[in-house]
Image 1 (tube, rainbow, N blue to C red):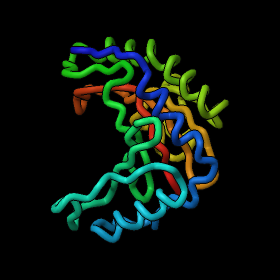
Image 2 (image 1 turned 120 degrees about the vertical axis):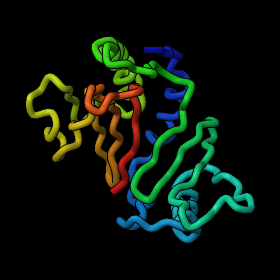
Image 3 (image 1 turned 135 degrees about the vertical axis):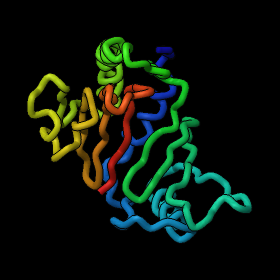
Image 4 (image 1 turned 90 degrees about the vertical axis):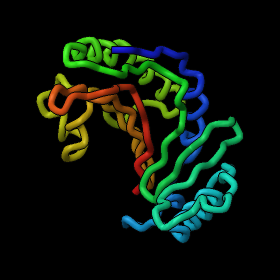
Length: 192
């Protein structure tokens, strides 16, 4: 197993941007699996009307029938990817992660997640305040404690509910079948 342990600077900046959105209702898209240029155009229109985020420029060939999301750059320099029902930061150089996990590495991956979860939770509290829900794999009802099945593939979960959406901070749950290849602590806003 290989690991990376980087400062949380990118996450600190990236969490500040969605924390400024008190109501995600204006950003929410239709509850569908639609894709294509019209879907992306709708995302760009809603996000730019509700935030000060700048959409990526469109180059020839960028938008096809498969397109379902678009990226935005915030004034802090973070990149946020937005779908009709979800938004997440592209903060690749922040925090702890493990990869190339082998069958004998699961305990070490779990230990790494447990060791680094508290710093991610505190950082998210800094921007969002106290969570609506916090739980982990040690709770026998964890899989369904927040909502049906939400914890099933997680080791840790914290939720901050806001109108129109909720920020979920979570860690992956390493498994042997199928073998988990990589784990980290991550977050996304699930938009209603």
